[in-house]
Image 1 (cartoon, helix red, strand yellow):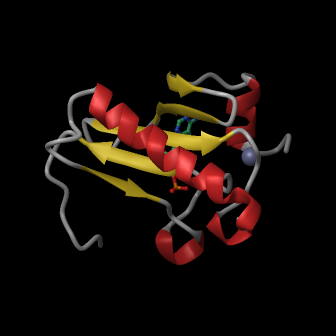
Image 2: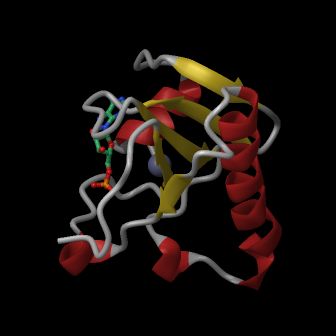
Length: 114
Ligand code: AMP
Ligand code: ZN
């Protein structure tokens, strides 16, 4: 989708600080980090939100989580811990409508979220 910010990042027409790239997905630093480690994992395929995912996307969604865990391991904060979050629609505060997994770590994170 040409009007989607994250599709533009996938296409390379908007720059990003990439940390991961494979045939299905991309990982890059959040532009406005909320933790010392704040990386977004997105599918190359446009999906507006988790609400639009179908059974066909099961593997893709698992792939995003695996990529996040791998990044946390390889960057030394997996044992200390981290959070993976997918915000969906208004009540969760979703602002970019191309599905993404937030990986947050590098500090203690409060729970429950506000
Ligand atoms: P959400 O509120 O869950 O939709 O998260 C969207 C995230 O995308 C926010 O944390 C933003 O800081 C982040 N973001 C917005 N534009 C960019 C960009 N150009 N590059 C990297 N991250 C971005
Ligand atoms: Zn998109």
